[in-house]
Length: 399
Image 1 (spheres, rainbow, N blue to C red):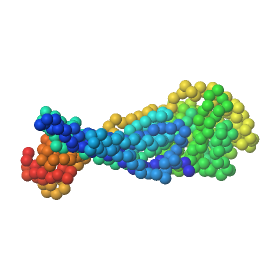
Image 2 (image 1 turned 60 degrees about the vertical axis):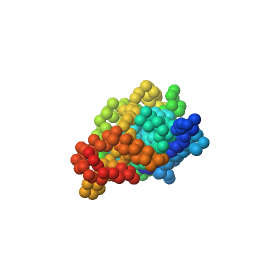
Image 3 (image 1 turned 45 degrees about the horizontal axis):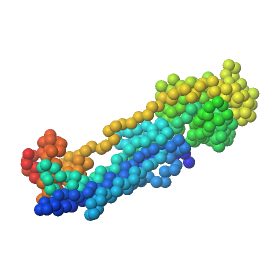
Image 4 (image 1 turned 90 degrees about the vertical axis):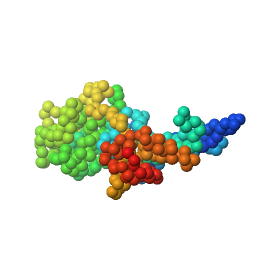
């Protein structure tokens, strides 16, 4: 089964915790606790040998490994290995905020979810403000992300036509495709791919399910068909002179209306207009007439394809990457009257400490005061005396 859409739930790896340790030199002690390892990131990577998501269709949840904690013998925690999910070229990545990335090159990578940083040991936390810290950082917590992958096939040529126009028969004749064929409409319900390898260059060609009136607005398979045109370079209109409802010119108009209504820029692509089923003694003057069933005049079609110099043509699509992939750093909400909760990535960095209770409390207070959270609380009109819940800590707001 051809799978061109899939929803995934991703979890990055948590960072490992740093350690608290001291070395004694004469009468002085010096912090020497090591840091934790980084958690595994989740990376999407394109592979030109993949043509849909059927290889991951049965698995919708992916979890990267956690980083290792720093050991008591002063060794840093081990960094986790990143989790790589291979996807076909032509993958678009979405989350609730919209499009995150388009991947249209082979071996293209995107870090879709970054692993948690390892917590610093007290050796790295030593500063002029605190020369002998009795605390260490916990590693950053794992992050969850819901994404949707959608595929637009990367092809050189796309064959389009009304149902039962002979598209699958044609692609079987000129390529190595095993497309299903029969003499009734809608035999093809998903794209068939093949490779033309008997010309000067090799070309990837796809046979798309038949188009009907209203496809551009979602009638029938509609948009699920037309989206695959964005990454192609040449269109073939395959026409059926035996169609009892639409003559050749009407078929051309229908295909143009639906395709260009879906995406006007598709007008920039070259179009080959081919009339099939010449074996039925139905031919059209001034057009290329073929019989996909009998294989007649296919050499003329292949010659026309070769003359287009497809290798130097460009598709409409371009690679895209939104740079701000990280979620909001913190969120503030009033749970009840004068009781506020702050959570998010920044909060984890503030309260994610372990060690001596007084040292931990002082460090949390310092990090909170030097973050953007107090300004946000003031902006929201939080009243003096309100209770602020910061992770597992609660305190009275004094501003």
